Image (spheres, rainbow, N blue to C red):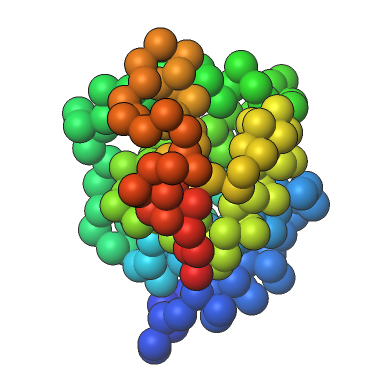
Length: 194
């Protein structure tokens, strides 16, 4: 078993190369998980302890994707999950799982929990997750939740889109504009994330 090294000047590129060398499972999720773990290990992003997973789930993910690695579940950034301020956690989890392409796979549950934990962050979802671009997040969602990806026809920012879907499912329409195209906050929902 290998412990994660402490690089002199930790950056996600070093961690990413390290994780890629130790990948034991090739899945379309492998690259995204490697990137999220690399950013998390470098103290970047907003993911808390265990990427937002319970400790046993986190160790299951690490063991499944990187058989030879041993990782502490504590976030190097010191962030912990405060789901008390996320009343919609269960609703968001149910929403994602109901639209999962592979609900029987354990990694789908892990990806779902990580996405929900990323929604606790204050930045764009791809940044909060520690992914390297919005395209990474769009790819992850398209693979794991293709129905959700297909529904985002106007390329709305992912966190806003997920919450808009939750609100609409509950019959809650908080936007005052008759359509997104005439809303004064249009650029906040659809503008560049780079």
